[in-house]
Image (cartoon, rainbow, N blue to C red; front, side, top):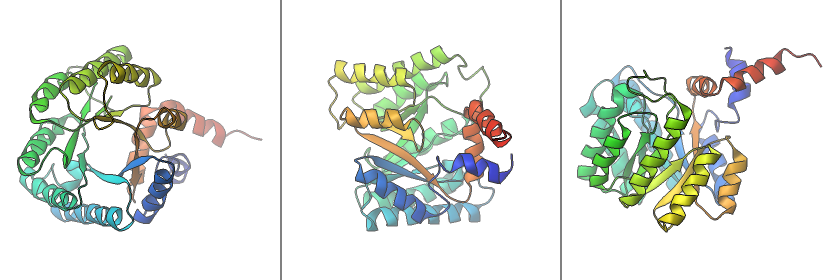
Length: 287
């Protein structure tokens, strides 16, 4: 799809190409009581110099969070920091970012990517946790992966801070559930497992059914606000976002920015092909 066309769709879901674009948007979110996590778009770098550039940009995000007093933290993709090149190198890069965040009592989220990196990312978290505490770094668990329950049971032992989502990468049926109801049920199984173990969880979903069921679990376990938050992508289901906020719960919005917006946008389109159809329908309609 042409970039100009994709941008028409994307601008609702991306803060912009610059860090200042992200800062301005986060300030607007904060002004209405919404938290944020900032993500520099990009992944799977091919050499160490690109990975270092990514780390430098992520470090600038941390500086802006501090200077602008933003109610936000940082999300990164491990392959963006070199995980697909050298896991030790990626650890050193990410450790530098976590160390900087620890000094200002802030937090880094390791995004979860496609299945070749699941174990590598979990190992990376464990290694970082040996150096830093639970409140400094967390991970993402995807409910469509068949391995996730086992991963959660293992990660619960080290008091992990989670973001729980369904998962968006295309994975083979041998390792990933494909049926909507099964993915939903597994999401709720994982969420309850995390809650029962006393771990903090970011309930990341735009599925109204899962949000309603999460409310029930919050009531069932009498969860305090220091144990969970809801999370959503920028520009998606803002009606639900506002409802959650009105209901008195914390909500954090994932705010991506950067020059590598095209690949991110294509993933969003693949995730929801109906949107692509809508774009083309409007593009070629005559009024």
